[in-house]
Amino acid sequence: MTQRHKVRKSVNRAIGPTVALLAVLAMIGYIIFGPTGLYAWGDYRQSVEKKRVVLSKLTKRENELQNRVNLLDRRRVDPDLADEYVREKLGVMHPDEIAIPMDDKE
Image (cartoon, rainbow, N blue to C red; front, side, top):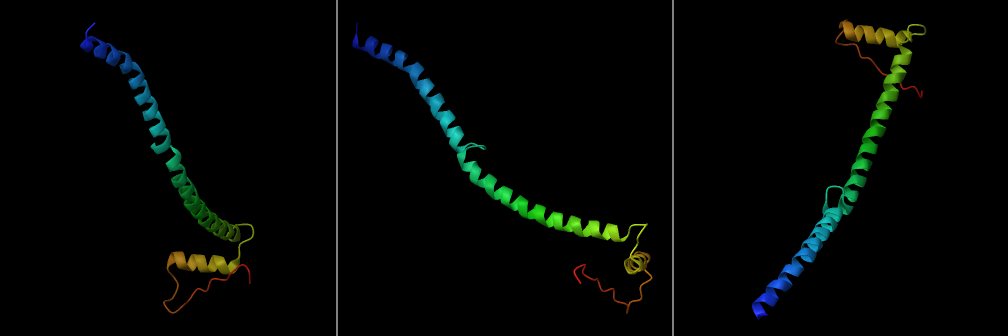
């Protein structure tokens, strides 16, 4: 056998393991750097925290609106709130009138 034939045979034998090694390295790279990889977990945590803040604000707003709905219930309407709401929606408030919202805590 010639030297050239030995080199070619060695290269042919090394092609399979080299391709397999490259495939494994590509998978490991995807696991670490991919869109759902290890580095993305930090972004997910930050995203979850931001969404929790938004959720708490929306929950607070929902509770405020639910309280207003309860105050406007047909069976037990708060007269002051109904008067303020009707005047505001119909546009019959005078320009010099001021509607002062009352907190439920007071």
